[in-house]
Image 1 (cartoon, rainbow over the protein chains, first blue to last red):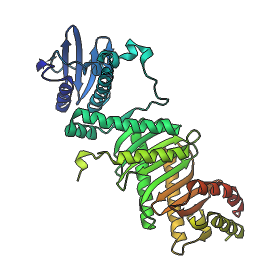
Image 2: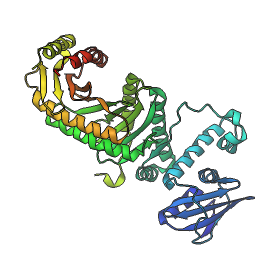
Image 3: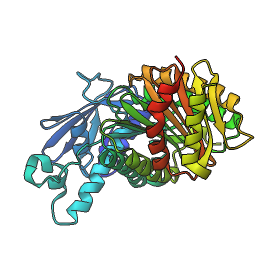
Length: 284
Length: 124
């Protein structure tokens, strides 16, 4: 397989090969620049571009608008430098691209904006006090991209990122947050300081299901939220609207402001409730 | 039933006024040792039993997540707020139900004010 990037964008090339779950090596050229992409088990596992490797190389590649690509066949990658799921990788790349294009409108080149950390460190904007990394369920990401294109998917991903970041910034003592459904599916999550998000959500889903049953048996109304206080943490579980999805926020209770936790999580829950966070195959 | 505990629960009811729904001191065996309620339909025994189960489950969840022992669980619905706060070493907890409209800060202040006194009034 070979072709021109003018006909098939890098993002499409990645999507195509990942969906085919091929083991493959691709060489890409644009002017004097050369890159390599390796695919395995439905994901990009390694990328090289100039002196960059891994995710950063992919993000750089996504800016290429012209050039060529050439499949070198079923060649295994010499190493694994990327573990991120392909759709999440593309969403992050598109988010960066979108952000850089907006900034480029203010006068700077796309490359300057994308790699400002390297080219002009003093111009990098101040990072948030507690930068959180947000991941959207891959099925939902794909659904967003299929429904409204990558731009819409990036925008939705950005909205999730903003909400989680706001919680981390406002509450203090942030450990982690997730949006999940009653089945324990993690829909959106940040990294958790103490454990894998799925582990937190699995335990919490079991707990909140029991809380719901108790509230129902006692005829105590419609469950809105549950705040569990432990020796070290606050776990706030807030339902999104009247749905079966909930927002979980875990914070260090020696550092967090409880009033702020309740307020910010209420605002965030309202925003998440307005988003399409249904896993496609589970739509009725 | 402890007279001292009952007296304290009456004081709590007076402090919370119209927002008070019910209060119980419950053992981890699910049995209430002191009770006060403002609504006749509030089934203290049933609530105590269910919330004991919830507190035990919360303890297991917290332990598995390495977050230490449970101190309190608070549930809010569109009609009530229910607080279950562990007293002392964890053999008993204090169950307090208020209306949904109660001022959360005020309820927590009242709980803070009475917590040690309730703990001290549990017969040992």
